Amino acid sequence: MPQFNLSKFRNKHFLSLMGNAVISLFGLLLFGLLYKTLPKDDVGTWLFFMATLSVLDSIRNGFLGTAMVKFYAGADDLRAKNVLGSVWYLAIVVTGLMVALNSLAFIALPFVHNQQTIVSIKWVGITLISSLPFSVIFWKLQADEHYGTMLWMRMLNSGSTIAAYLVLIFLGKFNLGTALLWNLITNCLTSIVGMAARQGGIRAVVHRTKDGIMEILHFGKYSLATNLSSNLLRTVDTYIVTFMLGPGAVAVLSLPAKLMELVEIPLRSFVGTGMSSMATAFNQKNMQQVTYILKKYAGMLTFAFIPLTIAVFFLADIPVNILSSGKYRGTEAANIYRFVMCTALLYPIDRFTGVTLDIIHKPKINFKKVQLMLVMKIVGDVVFISLLGNLYGAPLAGLFTTLAGLIYGCMRLQKFMPFSVAGILQTGWQEIKRLAVKKAV
Image 1 (cartoon, rainbow, N blue to C red):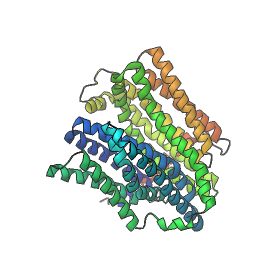
Image 2: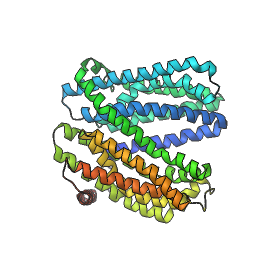
Image 3: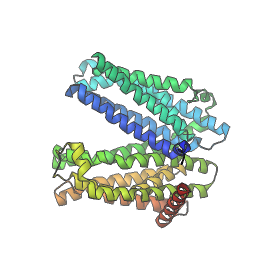
Image 4: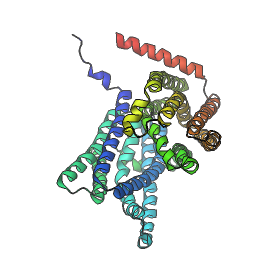
């Protein structure tokens, strides 16, 4: 009788995938609770606050998160302490500056009458402080490739929030104020547990060096700019489509965008594990291994997306109708989902070339790559929507944007390491066959 081998589910890829899946699932549950129990205006205020918090957190993460993984992974003990200490120091400074600016905003509170702005001013600073320790902990765990611990920490943070909200709903005490308060408390809980388990390494702050701080500052300015540009790349459709076709068109376009989480979950997971592995190889001056990891992960993901793309092509109407309760039946949503899913076949190679440029210490080139894609997206949206007069112009612009980023990224990266798109696909296929043989044994 075959035995169940639990060790198969303890590899870093599965754990990283589970971590991202857990975040997505808990996110859906959380918003479901908010939409079900809070008045519409309070839900809008919560979303405004979370959007503001997300922007500020992306600045901190974009500035320090990638730099932490790049310089820390695979480094010797002294170098690792220098990097960790420097990151802790900068994380405290950056958070302190944000809190200081938030404190200045309190002066304007008597003159502010917008509820969303008032709530954000009151809560964003202290919430940023509560999330500081576990943010650094997550960066360190990713660099160490401790994805099992990351999974448990994520479950603690998101799970305790939902549990607290359910208890508050049961007691009849759930409202916007208690939602904000318990979001803060569960952030503190995660940070305290992580620090108590000695996962943060805050004592390394005494090992910070001026050179280490300047190195991270120099690298971080590009990764920060790239991160912010990437966020804008994902949201620019909303502004352009609203202006050209109206808010109703945005609702249709957002539906396939939400369904693309099917792609983003595995893509984010493998990019995360691949980035830490490449950083370790690069810090050990093993460029051959860096090239192999790029080809392996990008190639395997590309082939993995093919059956998903085929399924979406034939069955796109089903998830669109389920998610929208049939409200968007007969709109462009299903066809856009099909088109975007076909474009997603290019995502793995495009995403991994960008990550690799960061890892080999070429963040400026990756920044230029994202800037090129952003310009292409804006111009493409305006041109194609104007020519076609409908929503199909947006995904068509997305195809040319992804192609431009992929071509530019590959051409620039090939100057530093030998690879080709054909080589990526060949290596990916070989790895899939090898994995299939191993599973069959």
